[in-house]
Image (tube, rainbow, N blue to C red; front, top):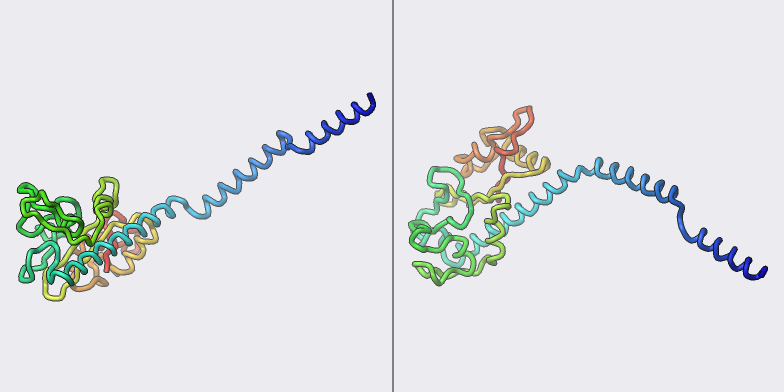
Length: 225
């Protein structure tokens, strides 16, 4: 009988020692909650998320530019024109930046007659298009679909069309760090720090410059290269 009581006492003690009381658990949860709030306050999660998105947009812009340059090096002309004698001008038809989407057509072509878009020309082509365009396989279709998705931060392209002018791919930054980078390059709202062949669209790229006040991130752009 005594042995049974001792065994019961030992088992009860072991169970008590193996777990935590409700009060101890509440204390630990409270401490973890305080630490989580402190960490979130310190790192500004929204800024970190937006910075990650901007980093992704910069990487996509670099890949698109690289694909255009490779196409040009191989074909002798850019993918939005049809031969080396065409003017390399790349804009929205009114002197502004061109939104990069599925309706970006080769010069002289249109979506209505079935001609394939520039992105298809840089990708795997379209055998069903009116001009039966052949893709250069510079870009994967998954990439072109992602950068033209409705939820993606849009990319814009521009080339002034002169001899030796660069092609630019731009995006509107979402994070404060990238807005500051855009401001630094612009120098002012007239784009004094921009290359000469990007000055024509300075209002789009640098129009939100702060001039000592808070910048307007909706009217600022990061442009590569």
